[in-house]
Length: 178
Ligand SMILES: [Cu+2]
Image 1 (cartoon, rainbow, N blue to C red):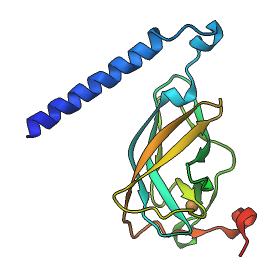
Image 2: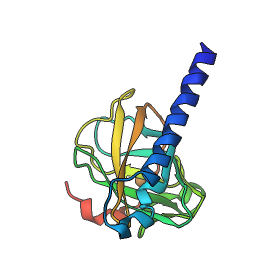
Image 3: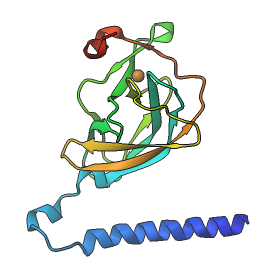
Image 4: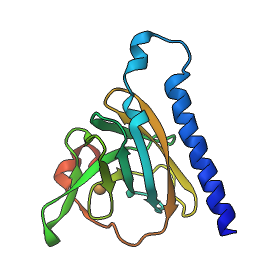
């Protein structure tokens, strides 16, 4: 059973690698200028992704975003099919004084490096869920980069009792309604 799983995984990886090689070489004929630069979205490998189950209101998504390319990539905008407002948040302050606030500008990932999104650190923040995030389902987010390229990443939803960081109200003026 384990052996078969490993084999399937290896095959899957093989296919993935082949897929990458093919898209790099054997692309459809197009404008010559577009073939030379790697689009930022293609440089992204997301792993350990998950989102926190929630009925409504706020929630967050986490994971490791790796930049496979030789140039920085900049995560610019996150969206989903429900049209949720999703922000990139960072933690500010220290100890018990920590609050979260919207990151100013893009989330830049240096060449070969990871951006780690985790409870207590940077995270993707759902501001006002249009639909519940149900445990064992998957939240699909569209990650758009500074060059306009984008890719969809799945975040399996799970129950999590942490990540209740307080929100810096000063940073959230634009949605302060009620
Ligand atoms: Cu947040």
